[in-house]
Image 1 (cartoon, one colour):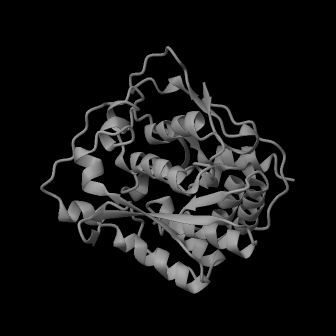
Image 2 (image 1 turned 180 degrees about the vertical axis):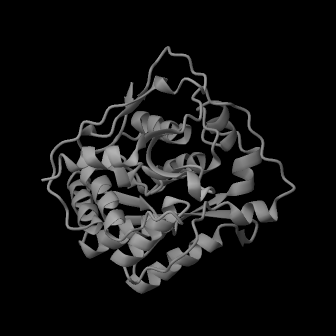
Length: 315
């Protein structure tokens, strides 16, 4: 079963159905890229533009989950510069009179003011969704019935449902810039630092499987939509020396790169959206009803090997 949503389905991974699902048997995960020849982009910004224009040509109603992070802001910046009609959607975690992800909302509002655009805000009673809701797309159901064990992707599934209710038939894009470039083996040990390409872990598979079945026109991982996007990301990292040994995680490298490409972008930490929630509700236990049959494989490809593979198809 191949699970993907990329141009020409070039980035394909799958689980060997019927195989032993123990975490130690990582060879049950299969990655078989079907890389087509592509014109070498001048920069990652150009590769983003090409991908966005192709997506827009296939969709009459395009939206972007705009978290307030650098990944989604960069996508929105290119879309606006290219004149692509797109609706930015931001989910607010509401608890009484509080907005528990207002640290993300700050960057969303800043961008909205600078570019004079409207944001589609969708409010979620986060305590209700997490602990008392038993509807089909509550955390309880998504966790126990659909197999999600990560709150972040699960909350986006709920947001996708609310987006459909509000906007109807729409193609939604996500940023998720952590895929595919990642630092390994031990990000805290500089002597053991090896940059890799991460092509599979359970949250990715859970998300892709859901979109494959429910929203096949969506783009859940924009930054792997085309091979030229991944290639340009890797080549720009090399050009600006953004994978230095002192860099622990690829987020810092992406943040530096986006600042280079989009000078007006404000540098910020990498947020998950849940920081203030756990600060306010540290006494509330996080229950989990389900353990996914898909293990956390953390399966990687050698960085230089994959870069060379892409380079062979760059014209």
